[in-house]
Length: 297
Image (cartoon, rainbow, N blue to C red; front, side):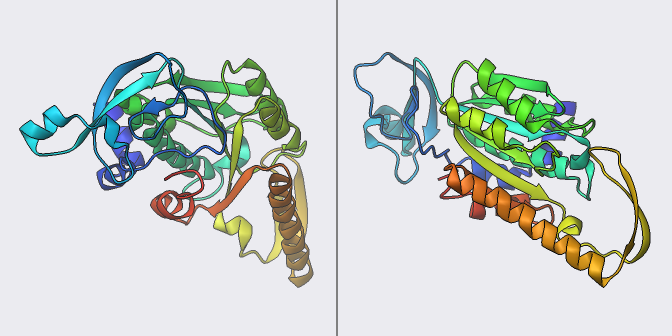
């Protein structure tokens, strides 16, 4: 019962109902899509029956079970799974800096991952989660099936931020050890002194369809600070004394703008979809409005 409670804490039942109508979008063709919701371009392949789901606008009428329609007067699809299926790789930054804010950036990332993972699982895609700290840390192994979502929610609900980050090293290691490519979604504040670019390029080289969700706290985007302060870098532990006046605030905003522009420019130049969000944006709005049409349909 504890697992169900954690799941309810992450996402409301109303939100789950809305997510149940969505599907993942991939810009690349991968082997092994679940048949039924979408038309498959592959022919002559081995498939097996997996489940039913209620018909939605745009679904392939070839997979409607007319026997069920005759008994229930409702349209249901027969779902078949190919020998290999699409894998959604959810890569979460679990380093110290992700503990900042209320809710923390990691809590927000966990809720996003739970929502995206739920969409994948109910559409019979394989879903896996990996947490990146100074190396690739704990993970939730790729699995498939609607019945797995409580286990996913339990894992996401127990995540805690801690330790330095090593995005490039962690992502590169994940790309090398993954047995199959798919849609890779990095959810991170990108606050890594060593950078993140090499790790994202490693995913691209392994033919992942890469998305970055750049999560920041509103206090990072628009800080309300004044006077003499002692600040500690969450990633390096470096302590710095400074006086926050108009000049210092101006310098901060300039550096922040450059940091954000650099991240977005890098992603665009490398055909990585870039989404930026602050943790005061409702997760429901982020998923149902901002990601719809880009990562979800």
